[in-house]
Length: 399
Image 1 (cartoon, rainbow, N blue to C red):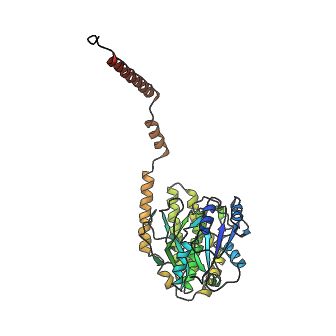
Image 2 (image 1 turned 90 degrees about the vertical axis):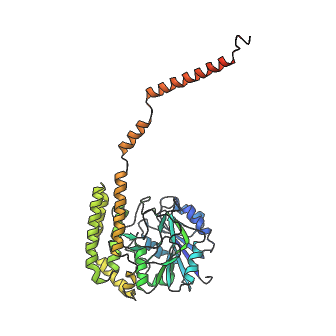
Image 3 (image 1 turned 45 degrees about the horizontal axis):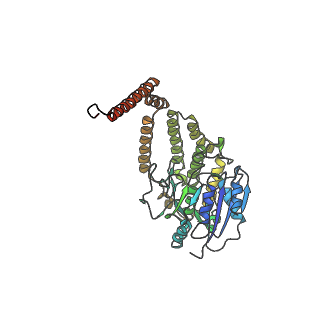
């Protein structure tokens, strides 16, 4: 493990809310990082100031720079690759546990075929909330974690497991393979670049693992709309639209050619079903996102054709190797039904604003009730004082 060299790349975009803890977590690693560089994509908050205060070298790029382009710019400026050099890809809203890097390096040291490894991701605020233990993609484009909705971490998934991919938040990637595969696809400016890269890793004959002894806490700020999505390809700056668009791109760029007609039909059908569901939930914006995401790929077939050619150049093994990591349609259906039932139950049981107002009004005493209660308290107090005074008066017999 001592022969490994680790270059950390921290991508920052308006991350001042999380950066202090992230920087502190990097400085406290039990296995020290050999070098670190931050790429700031036009932050408008105090992120650059925080990075300078931490004495982290900064590469400044335009605000609409995608994640893959930001990482590529950092790799280009690193010294020439040494043997067994690893890139540790970091988000500005993801704080690794102090033992994370040590655990990741220990795992890859024992597995020479592994070129991509990632930590167990837990929630930033609720640190028992299990976010990801490796990721895949469903045939309808959904991001697949294999976890129940809001599942809590009780060690039930602990261990080292082969996976299709791991999140870029905390991913450790061997630099020579990263460069051979062309890095992250820069058409995927944000979201799904991790799944796509993992797919290409396996197609090139390598492996990816999740190491649960390594833990990181992720705020998922962009996905949960806690900051703007400013990359060039983000139409209307809507994260759901960009995520759905990129999911379809990943499937159509990587899948075996004879599956393309079936996948295309499934993507359109799933988008239509989800759009109808959003309309019933009175969320027309999200419904529009679903349709626009698929439509945007239809009007830009050139990008997909080029992407498929690029992937063919680095593919060394059969696509069947990747298929073992794609969830079966039966499993996808069961998960979809369970989540739909949960969503309907929550929708039906969710109290309305009017009911909450009614309940709060009924719980408050009226002015008349307050007056009666005050009179009652005074009467009781006077009665107790009179009783006490009488008990202390000497009786005639005692006199």
